Image 1 (cartoon, rainbow, N blue to C red):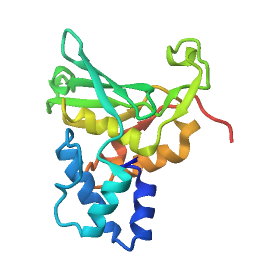
Image 2 (image 1 turned 45 degrees about the vertical axis):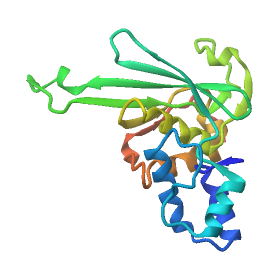
Image 3 (image 1 turned 135 degrees about the horizontal axis):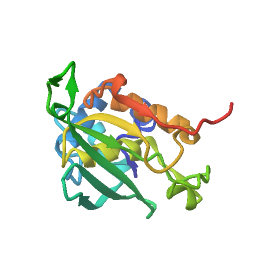
Image 4 (image 1 turned 180 degrees about the vertical axis):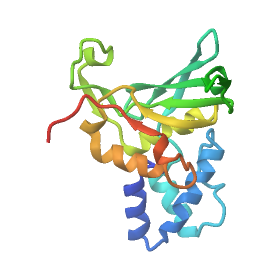
Length: 206
């Protein structure tokens, strides 16, 4: 079964079944608020046809959070996430207190802000010698849902303000899933500001 966060797939299935896609963000909101849920029967106000479709073809998440390691100063949390195909990727929560900085000689306003570093592939084709992932070789692309699910898992530990694609993989080598995931992350219910999403790339020639 597919992740409900595989946006193009769930929209196509809803359309084929004659179900309004306007209910999809409601499903996403339910999973985001209930990251440990094992089924989608608790999503409110869906039709019987929608519940049946979700049971047969979708899962709340297709990945599993298998480990979380905190740094000694508790500014970072490394998440190990197992995918449906048996491979694993890492996502890292990085916390920074803006009040530690100075602006015009004065303490900056704000507080603790969390950034999530997400992966886009298992392994990588680029082979950069300074990068541990580059030594793995390429194994598989993540679906857009598997990318988004990293944020779902991370919300169990912190409220995420920023997203950086600087984890495992070269994002532009998984372009379609990358763009689709960003569209989901910047829409309801996640509502990450587009200005707070950064895609790190070694640059892929056209």
